[in-house]
Structures are given as C-alpha cells and as structure tokens.
Length: 116
View 1 (cartoon, rainbow, N blue to C red):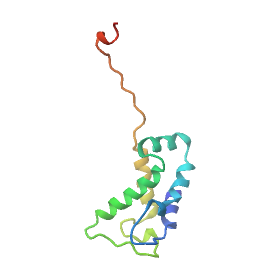
View 2 (tube, rainbow, N blue to C red):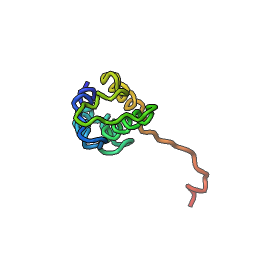
View 3 (cartoon, helix red, strand yellow):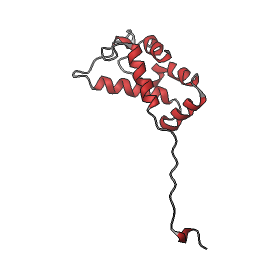
View 4 (spheres, rainbow, N blue to C red):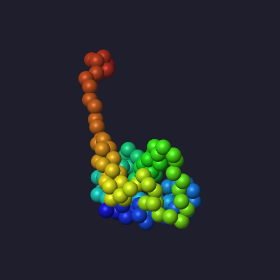
C-alpha cells in the first residue's frame, strides 16, 4: 500500500511536520484513478491527500494524553499513535472513501421566476 510505504519512508527532520515532509503523498495522489483525484481535489484542494495525511497525524497526536514529541532523525512510524502503518493507511483510505460525491439539488421555483 503506497500510503503505508510513504508513512514508513518519512524521517522526521525537525520537531514538527510540514506538508513538504509528506511530498510522497502528491505522487500517490497522482497515481490514483482520475475520478479519485478529481474527488480529492474537489473536497480537499490541490495536493489534498497531503493535507489529509498531515491533518490526521496532527489530530491523532493532539488526542494523546501527553503530546508526543516528534523525534528528529526517526521514522514517522516510530510515533506510538501510528502503530501499524498498514492499518493507519487503511484509516486514511477510509476517510478518502467517505468523501462525498458531487451532488446536485433541484427544486421547483415559484412561477414568478419564469414569467416575464
């Protein structure tokens, strides 16, 4: 799974995370089917997978009883809240699958909108 591989390959270079630390997510998103890429960009913006992964990491880190320090020079997967990188990646994929599709709402308008 490409997301799990990305998580495992990310080595922390400072005591905080930037989107640039997760550059692999751009490649992963670009390799997804076009309709999935469009869905991600529609709801999360350009580079949306990177934003999603970063947001999930920050959210999970903030949920810890004691905020875990980001150990410089260690892999991202050394963080206790990640646990199994494959399972963590599956959770991210589940979030992607949960993004809504494009919806269109139609409603009948009062007659005075169509009369001159």
